[in-house]
Image (cartoon, rainbow, N blue to C red; front, side, top):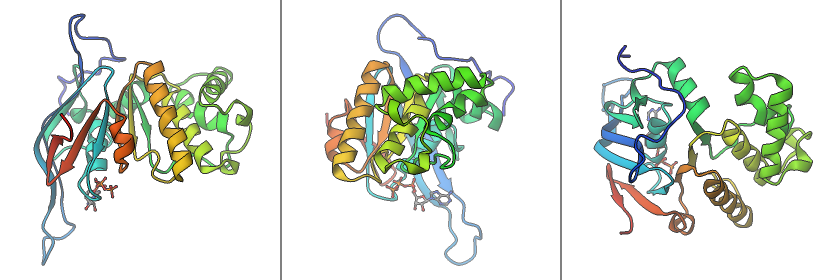
Length: 250
Ligand SMILES: Nc1ncnc2c1ncn2[C@@H]1O[C@H](COP(=O)(O)OP(=O)(O)OP(=O)(O)O)[C@@H](O)[C@H]1O
């Protein structure tokens, strides 16, 4: 971690004129080392020298075959992992050089992350689950729960706020995880196959909700998906294949 990289807090537009790059990957390389370099234990290189720019307000889909490295790329954008080489920038913050604590602060303030599996705590209520990121940043319980309920209302679950998350359906649980991702009012939404575990009808409802939240909250969103239909509804579609990231449609 370089001392020169300073956390700047919540995101502000860099310039009033033109498009603002919110996320930028420069020369990004990711390889996983093998546990042993004995027979067949070579490192697995997913991509090398990858460049990417995502502008404010864009909704970008990342598609590609299973194993192409989509989740790994999203993890790098969220500072959940470090690149082997290259850098990830979020506006003027080099997120790939943050310490673990700084990376956690960055995610808590600036990124809403949705996983394919919701990772809610089943014994806690929906409201308590949504309130967790606010409690983690030191907000008082009453205020955090109040804001959590507002977000549950926003995702259509006002009536389920006091139900244990383990009692909710898969689609409802994914709505709760969306509320949890956005309760801190981040500028960026990163979603890794957010509809992957859902049946077609529920997936459609959750994807439409993501689109609505993206628009309503002026988010910059990156959605990893296997659904070309959903990807086609995003403003931009990128394909990760053979370690290269290309525009899937011009
Ligand atoms: N921590 C890790 N250590 C070693 N290998 C890993 C690690 N994480 C992922 N991989 C490997 O990297 C490759 C890419 O995985 P990744 O999950 O990024 O792909 P993906 O495109 O998201 O796949 P899917 O669509 O199936 O989710 C896979 O071969 C996976 O086994």
